[in-house]
Image (cartoon, rainbow, N blue to C red; front, top):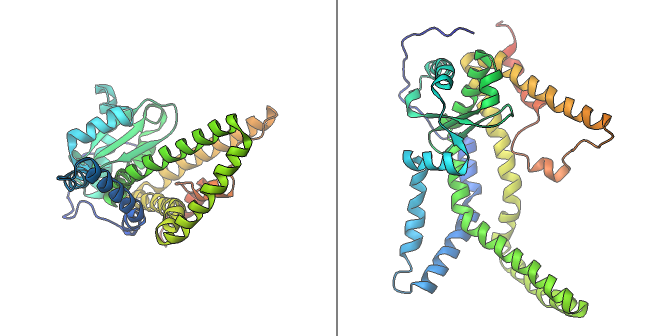
Length: 312
């Protein structure tokens, strides 16, 4: 596909927060409250006179999700992305300019990155990060590459990327505390089992009712924390369909459909190869399927069908 240069008419509103963004933020509230209570408690324990300061500073760090230097550090050292070479920029620039021109978005507000991967994939993160894998850059035709970029731009204009990052960041102290608690429990059971199985049984009998009592007493907090991952995954799947719709509305439905069909074919080919090798292809169980953040390829293709029909 050849892209022609033309005048770009920028929209007054460059990005927003759709229903999936609001849902993501609301579902992260229980995790945020647990993390806030944890950070506040530890702060007052270590700094009685200034216990309020660490929680305030921790909350303020959320603004770093939109701080460009911090985003660059996050992209490079956490996500493992790299800046594109000059040749890669020359390949990306026309597709990105076409996408942002159709969307009425200032493409200079975002940074394009490369992920060293042999997978067909792309990624939107933080406030301004858009990346594609080297495989996608090397093998996708220009039209399909633009469709992938349009999908990722949809995540940004809908607010999906920054809301997911903020939710993850503000729930991180609680996640780390829970992981540490589980590790201590496993270590305790391992040590006591080496001493005596009776001691292990007594430990379980003592701590089990205590855990149950705490769970029942704080059910209004425990229950949301338990079901939040499944609801977040459902909202994530809806966000993917919204990003697909964003790309389709810009005129990239046929190209995006081709990309999804290629990925679906590759998935089925991997399953066939596993069966021929006498192996059982990995299939997610029911609960694992509920925790998937992406809809199945056939679902995404089904939702693109209205954009593939001829007008009238």
